Length: 567
Image (tube, rainbow, N blue to C red; front, top):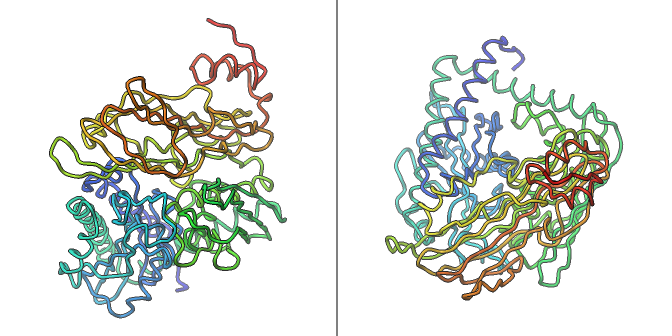
């Protein structure tokens, strides 16, 4: 296609696709039943063309979007000519473009005049995956089969007709099938809405014009990314990050990144130890997604997000069978958080050497909890992944402090914790405290965002609670001279308060515990990493932080050298 579309038509078509992506997010959020989707926003959308090239990604969860580039192509190749209008396909296999098992993806091919011209796609973190531990995170898993149901590509709708045998087969593998059916219906509605929008676009502008627009949008994104890379100084840069010891003999796992910039292209190589007998492994497409995420934090945020952005970037994951290039049957339940975050941090640490003024401090890693019990209000079972227990502060950037309780780098601010009242209405828990924690941010010329103190209890029932993630041994990375010290306020600390006196039982990083009615769970999350020397921070900014309660007078004096008198 050599004939370019005029700029006005290209802009209108691009805007229509962007609008459809935003409508997909609204539809999923308003129709999903699980709190993690309806409140937490843990989902992503994309639209691909008939060649399975992603032409628009939603401003959703970055952890999903890189892997989805490959997943759409795999699904298209898998079914080939065995596709028809009204089909809907389901899939979550990490080996073929999935992320981890809870991230289940629905793909809808869009036909116009008997030609496949679009794919509409939704990937959602589903409330349940089956398996031994409710919620999909099994801290004791040593292989993927212990984490839930793994779904190879399968048609749920064939020519517009639901395949009830397949849908029922899937639902029997989940503890709360009615909730899963509701969320699956939300995915079908989301992709169906985007299908209608794309058909209207084709009716208005015609097939050939829309095809040319699709190619131009991808080519334009590639051109913009090449321009971004070309402004970075040529050279080889190295970074690393550490996955904390899983307590099973693996020790700390170091991930190393070697990044080369040559003109307008970037080459990234990752090196890591062999896979471990735990759920901290990452399959290839998830690892590539992490590399892309690290790079995206060093470019202009307004660039169009489609697969053209990634054409100038090559990724070498090294030999198969490592933590970053996992092979079956490696467990991978934490792949979208712990290893992904550390892969992205290793890339960012390397790029910080190339472009210090674009650098950012580390974000608090995911260290989350899931609950499984029976709701005393109606006797039905529930499974709940709590974003509140998992999020900490965001990292600072050069020239900007970090955002408070913004979540994990893997989600880049997309997820929400939701209003307290909505959470208590949906889940039988009572939240006693949920507030910013003073002194939790890592200091720097620009400090990180704050973490939180959270205390909750179960309402009139007992529940099983699993704990999973990273961030109990090391604080988020600080860079360019910012303070790297580790103290209790800058790592996760979690306890069950048991007995009449509330005796604290510290929780290990990876564990499953029973929580009984009347007992409280107490959580302190860290803030984000800092950027630059703390001594270079504006004393007026330090004083304002003290007045706001973000920094104590003691820490202002010790870490910034600023004395703030009591009011």
